[in-house]
Image 1 (spheres, one colour):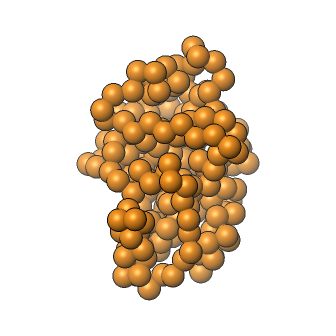
Image 2: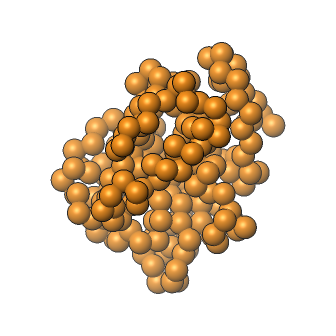
Length: 191
């Protein structure tokens, strides 16, 4: 309850009234932690929950969000559509400008969309990212994590990881689930 009330207080203080619910397992979104991992089967609501939180927080305070994945040949392969859909579902159309390859919000909120593997130099050049959301992270290689993690270095920045594991040998699954440490919150979510 105190976690939900902190988002309610933030929204009320900005004169933004939104009815948004989050699964109990996603309450950790409201608590700072360097790495948050949401993994499990399809249809669990991980992407929707992350998108909702980012949009609500970005509507009340400036936020720079890098939405990444291993490969992204076009914007259609990103979470751009998930975010756009949630803007409509939450009634935030007046708060956000949805462009073809970026989303902008009040007070300087920005969402960027990148593939890691084929854009390492661009990834390395990102500054001041508050939250990096890595979708379909099961496909992210060890080398790509080696580029991404040191890039997200702003004080109090976080890396959020969402994925459906494919193999027990996938690097992301091993590193962020099987070998998780105290700097991480790891949540298994299923349909």
